[in-house]
Length: 259
Figure 1 (cartoon, rainbow, N blue to C red):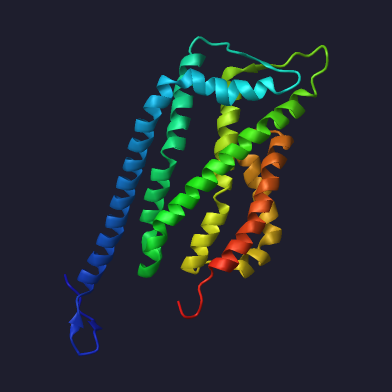
Figure 2: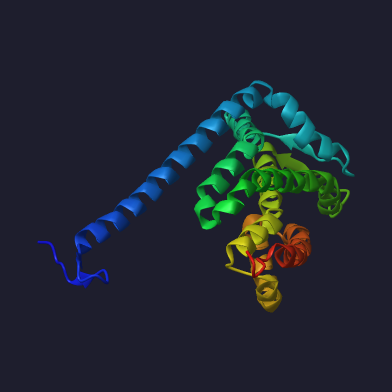
């Protein structure tokens, strides 16, 4: 049954069923677009993971073995299950696929979020995707450069009677988790820029929220990093610096009254 109880200002009834149907169709279309966005991103990761799987040993030597050689004492890597090295190759391949496909992934994510911007601001999508890729890779590189110092500090607690042996599965999981956590953390200024352009936040909001952000940042660092205090502080301190940078970015990106 159709209910015609609304008026459009000219004494012409408005079909509420059509209004509800249009809203439902809009929601369904958004979910359909989200599904296709996820499918395209997953396909991109798989395609980029194939060459990483073919050269996983070289990638492992560069990103996992080299930082250990800079530690003192240098830990040894062991494996205790027959399938650990097989699973290691897949983990390295998928992680490498995410890194190589990150420009396409960020372009898809921000294109999906484009309706939140004004039409004249949608040209920023490629610039935002490029900035997101740069920040993600910068976080990954920062983690890789600081990793030898962290490993040296952690292995420095070993006495003469304790030799450091790392299980390959636990060590690679540690590397992947730390690298992706830093990559995601370095996206904070980009997110602050987009939310400021949309009008959801501004620099004043970030300044008022600073006291609470300290608690949130240390909680997020505890979730994203392995369960030790050193790794949490290792991630939390750069996050605080990035939060301060986000305040500046939000101030520069805020909409002017003429916009």
